[in-house]
Image (cartoon, rainbow over all chains, first blue to last red; front, side):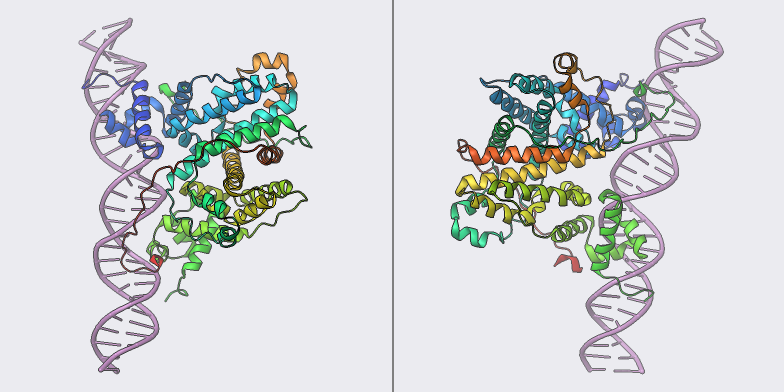
Length: 233
Length: 233
DNA sequence: GCGTCTGCTGTAACTCTGTTACAGCTGACG
DNA sequence: CGTCAGCTGTAACAGAGTTACAGCAGACGC
């Protein structure tokens, strides 16, 4: 028996550790097995394959995020607060963002916030399609910002904004603007500012034009029958 | 001589073709070599390695995008138009988006639009820090939306929005809202709506609070001296 | 014309990835 | 004691990026 029997939980925990330490692309099946002092096949026995493993990790981490409680007086302020704390929490789990994006599961990031958003948007007096639009616009805003931020923090100014060809005239006419654009972004501030503006704009104007046509069916991927292994439940 | 001498341009063109056809992760050095009827080592001779190859492709594709000419009466409308056409062009080159994200080069996507944005924001009467904020907010908005859209079109409704636990009460109180949220997103519409709201909000209110502190230095990656190969210029 | 040297190409390897066929161990239950 | 399910280990497969090294073709010097 060599060692206390390995459990699926242990595997997931170790995987989460590895991912937390060096990101999901550094999570290799062999590396994970080595970390646990076991063989690759045991990993496969417990979690199936890398796909399912990452799926499970995403689910696990999303569950850790917990619900979000809005703060603020006006509904607008409360919507903004939901967005801000959700962004904060997501950036506190950068590995989650990476996994979610790698697997095309952006939706998943919003389970803890969507309920709160719906509630607040209704409290702001919106109904029906307009309410849904606002919820989704805020969702996209948060997800987008988080993805972009993760992205740029991975590439620490490769080219130092090389010359800024557009800057020639701008620098003369508005040096403060040129300087501001040359400075590194302050994401926190930029995000707060953007969400406030977005929400203000959304709650003000009386919505846009046409309604959306459904965008393609999308093939469903049937469950591929694997023989006997616990991960298939 | 077996075949007319291979050039760096040929390599890049073939690589661009492969990427355009099946996306960047299907671009393998062996596959590329096979496509060109040559050996892997020739590829390495001309472009260095996969990293540099993708870098070159990004640069190339960004150059293809061309400048963006704003349309519309008011400055706000013109800013929106820049955002909308930039999004359109980026989505027309999905491989570019993927490459850019894979390599953490979001900045690069904005070379063709940034100049126009700066111009229009100034035309709207904004100066200095506030102008820079608006430019960047719009940038992040476009980049974010594009990333999220690319993301979700890669994952065609894995879980069919499973049950919507938040929906229980909402469905009773506002069935139209519940239905709207169950429908697939119409990204085009959502984006137009969001940008309009964002820009309206940004041009209206008199900006936020504190100024940004620079966010860490970021190590520079020195050039690693490779012996003799054309890609190192 | 001969020799040498540069630019480029090809062979064959190395390491690392995910994945799996298959044999073997361990403990519980009959 | 025997059997069988649950779990683990060995060793392989294919395919990824990368490179050491040999060799070819043409230009250039003498």
